[in-house]
Image (tube, rainbow, N blue to C red; front, side):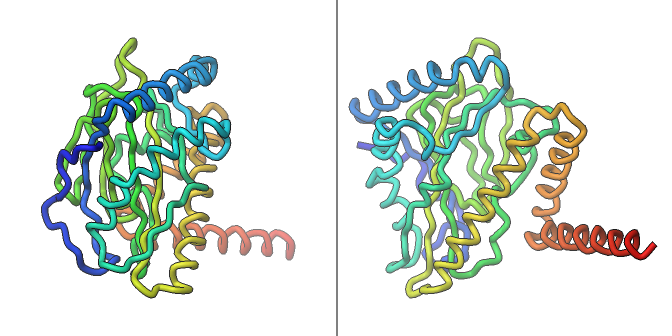
Length: 280
């Protein structure tokens, strides 16, 4: 059984799919679910112990983990309660599709190094496709292990929560401006969570829903690659990509098309410079 702690944020609506999905907070309460979470936490700390000793954080696609671990994770991300909480807040008849190919295991030490993980503390949207009117992505943050030494602020929904072990939060991936406040304390419980994503499409979206799935998949993979490359940057190239990640994150707050326009302008400028050099 799962208890809902704060299921409806101010301004929530059952209107069009393109409206904000309100931040929603819940908690796994059953002994079975808690034992499952505890077992996964122990496995993660053992499996990634060496990696965590070398770097401050770790993102891993769930699809790359052993099959038996994925089966156990499925019991959490396929929870009927998560599905029902999402469908309760969208128009009746909406499409619902887990995006398991984008789901991640995330382990964090809250590093502030101006690299890819800096975005935890900066106000940011996770995605930049909030202009798509026929779909939205709801992200579930499932906390396998965490203490209350920090809090997540969901700015648009006006909800704040210091997540602890066994709790989960749902947010609008593209439309919820949010950030983290707090810091990692040496010796405190390691922050371990699952980031699971669900595509919700408008009733009868058809091909627009397929396009939304493809577009979201591209955004996930490109952003993940850039953040992984620039995490705790050491080389000039890594630092440059890290600064670009942070710049685009800020531009995305202005408007989701601004980062895309900046990339296009840079590509055009580079092409023009190349043509100029060739003509010389």
